[in-house]
Image 1 (tube, rainbow, N blue to C red):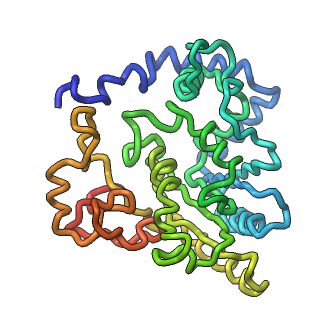
Image 2 (cartoon, one colour):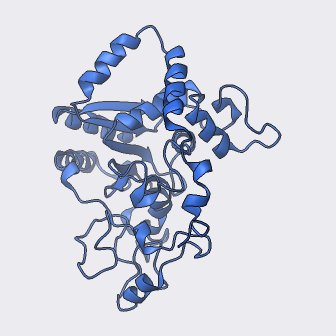
Image 3 (cartoon, one colour):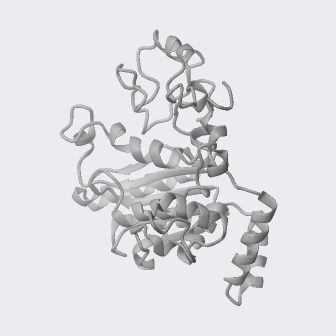
Length: 335
């Protein structure tokens, strides 16, 4: 592959940080001018927390008495008991703004005649000109080894306020570039997971259920958003239809969550197709390499839920992390 064929080289000036030394200096100066009087105290706190594990819970539910709130509280208590510093972004309580607009950028736009959110926020991130609420959330992500998204499933996805958090906080440059994505992504050393409640029963989300396969439902969030940014994705924690369960059953759900949290970081992540299986060029169409396709011909299932290759989906690819098959194409990938 020549540099002309490789989009990772062609677009380097657009997706990479220009003049790293000057950029860091410029960002430090901008951030320093925006600090509150407690800067020294926070620096001391950050220094002390460097040796302490940090978890971030991004939480979206309107009611303090909800089952989601109880699930969040169990996670806070259990992770804190393990020595974690637990940060919680309670999006509704924060009145977090979901809409992505030019208000997210401080100062002049690069191209005011044609506003492009991704490009403008990338430059704003590089120059320290993102709005304060985004900067605060990005700091939390930077500090966390583990990020848990806690929410009720809305329309087969996250609530709008959480989608807005993803759109605004996981900005281009900060969370991904064309050079740093999927298993080579910015957050490849961090773990993330979805923890959510459903209104439907588990049988309704089976391949032969009325709602269809839950693995397909979760693919856009787990692969297209979180793993795209590099996160290692732990199997989701799904609380099936708690509103229709007796109190004792809901209590058992919470206890099961507490038990899982005790060994959460020892779990293997879900399996995704590594970038190395693909021809990462516009000429090659970012398609599966012929050698990888040939290797897959003898396999009974596709590589992942999304990369099914017209075959049956690998069982529970998005909800369980089975041990890798040494002979499969994904055996060598970082899961």
